[in-house]
Length: 251
Image (cartoon, rainbow, N blue to C red; front, top):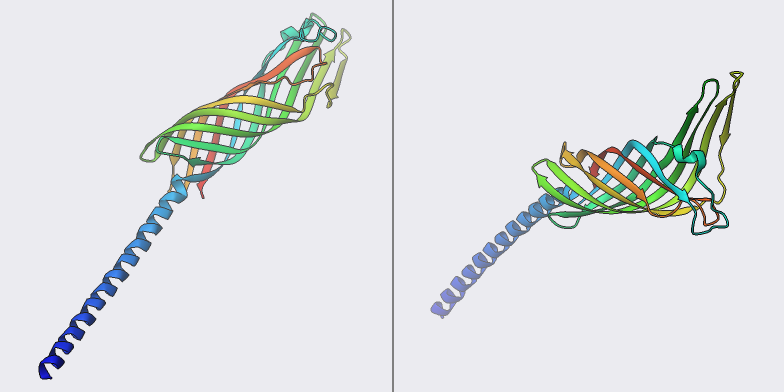
């Protein structure tokens, strides 16, 4: 009986210490796991997804040709052939997210412009005007990226689904009596309210902190669809080239 009791006692002690060791080891594992998850979460907040706000400024121009597809409405370019580039600007709000080590995608909202200007001067008369097409767009882009410590190099492109928000033309005419006449047109005939553009970007992003960063990049935008309906005398497509600067915040 004594031997049985001692055996039972030692088995109980060994079981207790063994269970205690398992529990201690388990607690340490949970603690380490939580620390690891917290660390991964902090890194993920910056590297996987970021919100951004940016502004772009550049030069806008257009392609313009007679609407030969609809000869009933087509017209020669006339003085419109002498239109030149004008300045453009826009703002962007959205987010981008990493797909893999070398890829990321981007989506958001954009407010941007296309346009052109015209200037004619004679000995005693002049005629100038500037046209602006304002769009609201939803860009969807795919980027290739390369990270080097706090610096990220990124280049890519995509498409922009856009809706024409506003049109404005400021016109000024000076006659031979030096009388200046100005007018402003805010509506446009046969407007195509919906359009699609292709866009390309290349730039650099710098991380000031794990969450906060800034970027600057080149942007080229080419309108794929006409600015007007099929009944308009010309086929007009807006384009722009310029620079974008913005800030990012890890989500």
